[in-house]
Amino acid sequence: MKKQLVQVGFFTPDLQRQIDSEFDSVKAELADAGLRATVQGLITRSNYQLPQALLEELPALRVIATSGVGFDGIPVSYAQQRGIVVTNTPGLLDAAVCELGIGLLLAMLREIPQSDRFVRDGAWAQSVYPLTSSLSGKRIGIIGLGRIGKGMAARLEAFGVSLAYSGRRQEESPYRHVASPLALAQEVDVLLVCCKGGEQTRHLVNAALLEALGQGWLVNLSRGSVVDESAVFQALTKGSLRGAALDVYEQEPLVESPLLGLKNVVFSPHAGSATVETRAAMLRLTLDNLHAVLGGKAALTPVPTVD
Ligand code: DGY
Image 1 (cartoon, rainbow, N blue to C red):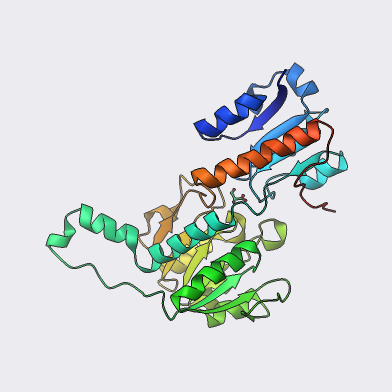
Image 2 (image 1 turned 90 degrees about the horizontal axis):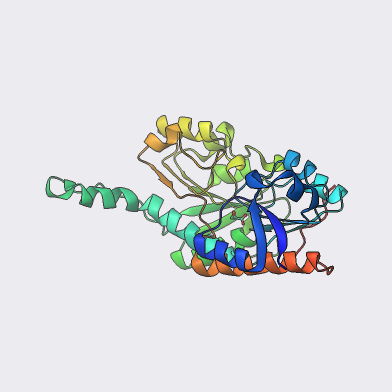
């Protein structure tokens, strides 16, 4: 008999079929009192918030498996205090996230979405599209030189840019370490936000940091919570910030935001890992973690213990 799971959030149809072939997975909002009392596994994706109140209703829970690397949406400290194992899928999605990051960066600087609209709308017959900005020669500052930050830096080397970073500590790396995000913003053209989400980095990119960046560009591949979106809107509308490319938002999905009315913002729907190949690999590891813990074995990729 298949083991039961409670599921928070959506997977694409193919991935959902894979989950359903291995487990009896029920959406949290449809789980009745009987299932809530006995269910031992929970599956989710890192794009979703997992409320502690839901976990409190699942007294038998033994494992929370998120298909994704971030776990800032999970009350990990509460879960671990209860002895619930939390697992994620590190190392599988770095390439996909970096590919999207490079794409967003180029789309922002070369105004690819705007140029596409220009051609579609027939505007080309009346005028020429304004000149855009080169990536080559830009000074790029990376906030957070973890897996994604390093992956972006390695790919960016091919574009003839200069690279510096700020982070909690100086890494073994060929790039220049700058003491603080503010100091980094002061000396670069483009800020790439690649750090972890969570309370420690909440609104790290704020009005003061954008002021320091001045006539620059911002790319956020991290978490929406890291960037104060209203400060980004102010900086873009007063003309200091030249453009932004965002994959993540303070509220997801992004449906109502003054940013949506601005031409110099490129959006993507929290899609860093959203390729067929990557999401399949992530789900495989997620399911393997669930099978392991529910079968009495150690988790393959548990998240670190938090205080
Ligand atoms: C992650 O895994 O944390 C990515 O942002 C996808 O959610």
